[in-house]
Image 1 (cartoon, rainbow, N blue to C red):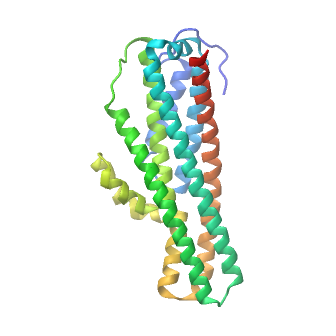
Image 2 (tube, rainbow, N blue to C red; image 1 turned 90 degrees about the vertical axis):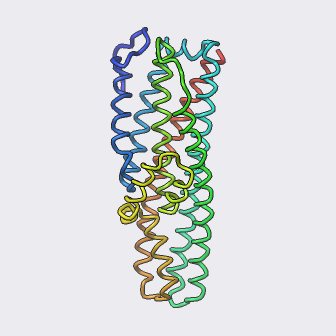
Image 3 (cartoon, rainbow, N blue to C red; image 1 turned 180 degrees about the vertical axis):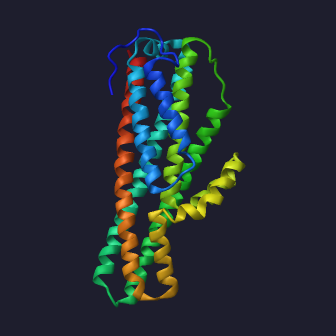
Length: 284
């Protein structure tokens, strides 16, 4: 993505870069309700496009001037704190995906080797479910951090007038949408249980109600949750004839995770780049 001319004036909402940011924000907001593996992947790709535009924005002279001014240091520090939190959450997502992948691959290997060894197989399935429980616990913590930051953004005020206001407004909107997508990602990795935990402390009860209503439909297209459900059913029924179906669900889960891992890693690199750019501005 390139722009042949770059204005030296502050980018208004009609500036090509600002307009592109607005378009990306609108697309991401429009897709917030959907939480399937495909939609999460599209959201992550959209976030990468959004942060690419933010990088272009930060190369313009006046945004650099605004962010480097001493009078704006407090807000810039809040921005940097927020970026650090987002990086931590990305790391949590990467760790959750990696741990789930490792457990999935180990279990697939066990399933291939231990046909008929029912007791050993049940023990390995329980190890997988225990690992998933640890993943969900870490995700609940990350979701809580995101919700805290989201509430802080919604309640804090700033002067929207002038150069400062334009830059601050754009970057706050980008941060808010990034938080929303990461919430969707983490909830997807964890499965429906994460939604019910989140609703305990969410201030937006209406939105949480909508998510709970959608939960059953989302389960049908959540490959990670489907694999876990198949394993729980296998243990409960004790019917080893269902092993082939379980293997299929685990394979689907692994493919889904691979796609998500690529998207999270790309977003992580974008966030680091933006953070380094801002740090360089204030340290010049």
